[in-house]
Amino acid sequence: MKIAIFCLAAAGLIFTGCGLKLTESANTNAASSVASPPASVPSATPPHVVPTTDAKATKQPQLCGAVTEPGKKFIAEQSFPFDYEPFRGSCFVTFGNLKEMVDETDVPRGSTFHIYKDGKQVFQFPAALGYDDWVEAAAFEDLNGDGLTDVIIAGRWLGTNFSAPINVVYVNTGTTFTTNTEANKKLDKLKSIAAIKKAVKRDLKSFF
Image (tube, rainbow, N blue to C red; front, side, top):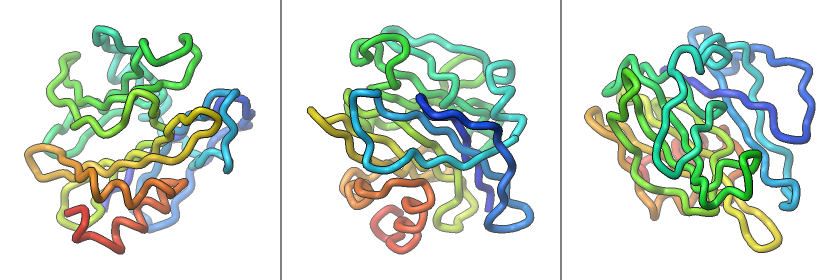
């Protein structure tokens, strides 16, 4: 089982460093990335952070390079090397929607996810987050043991005076990635990647 989770220091917090933490098996590779809600939106719980010293995360801009998309902002902190079928040797790329962001420092609202290879988009993940939603963490793991790495997204929805978790699982079919909107709704109250994975594995029939 391959796991890749990526780490990002949340806005307004200070982290002294990241250290590798293995919690499942000797051959497990983990990393994570996190972004926090805007300062004006209170968060009920601290952001989910999994420290990492993974070189792939720290060297991502050099490995994948910044890419452009009309009306979008490239989110380097949420874009990672992606060496899994059916897109080996590629990059998982996240964009924010410029029209939904207050300014360049705003969280990447309207987050969309793509696969780029050799600087060109080869796949766009099905839309699952709304214009006021943004990604806080992304994880890559084979959730149902079929040998194919799935994508887990921990996100957040912005309300008038509050924000709430909104989460997505993209299932790897071997040739593409799909998602089940109704199944995803069962994950919306979960506040961490670990909780999302646990819930999916308890209810595989709803997601696969």
